[in-house]
Image (cartoon, rainbow, N blue to C red; front, side, top):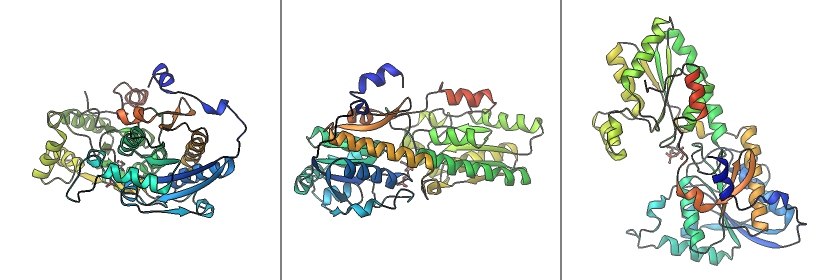
Length: 381
Ligand code: F6P
């Protein structure tokens, strides 16, 4: 994301404005929504510790993301609940998926979800709602902000695909875990002389696969943003064999697909794999490789494993920075914002910026160029 666009969106950098914190009072509702990841509790802790330090505050914990806000499932939290959670994976509040596309749809339960959320926000007597989540969470947060609620977002996802921020918390811990998987697969691949296809999370954006592929020394990296040619994948494998390599490691994002499937809509791609009895793209790719080359090929799917366990020190720091910055935004009543890191600095963007688009891997991204420079194939040639 180039600088002037980011600067245009950044309405302020409030750290430079070190106004003496006057004693004020805030009642803050907080929820975590969407896929969980390590760093959520560190971010919750960051918001809370900074708020308790800077002003009088009462926290209301909302259970299971937007479900709790819709159904009125919330409770006042004590300050002690925010201690001892820096290193704890997952989220102490619980989470759920409430797809944004359904938020304004009245379903069989006849519940107007937006009206319910607004009414519960009012019933709680909140000064502000803090939402920790990914793209869908930010879309709903922006909707609530446009409906007049005071909302602050924090960018969470292992996918690192939130527009306007260099990085989301959860991403680097997932890269660490996924890289360990790639590292370990090398020894068994080498022992058996096999092709190993490692499928990583990332339905729309391939950041996790790209970073773990480079960090883990993968030979082929396949991303949703760059539909691959099967012939190119096979020729990369054959080139490695000519160069006397006993194995090939392929990392592929769960949302990647080949050039033939690129012509399909995403629902059609899912049906295509289902019709062929492949649970996911990696099984389809493995079967194609094995049938065309006769080489033993195996699939590894770490799945939710990369979202489990404790946050890395990097993510503990990032979550604490994001959380404490959110508390400053609340203190200054700078609502309708989502915290971000831009060029290494903590700042914020309007919620509508994060809600407006997904941050995909550009084909000419420096990390893609780096991979190509060291001979990684992206299945494009
Ligand atoms: O949004 C993060 C994410 O981990 C994606 O990478 C993945 O496709 C999705 O969540 C899985 O969702 P769930 O945990 O609901 O199965």
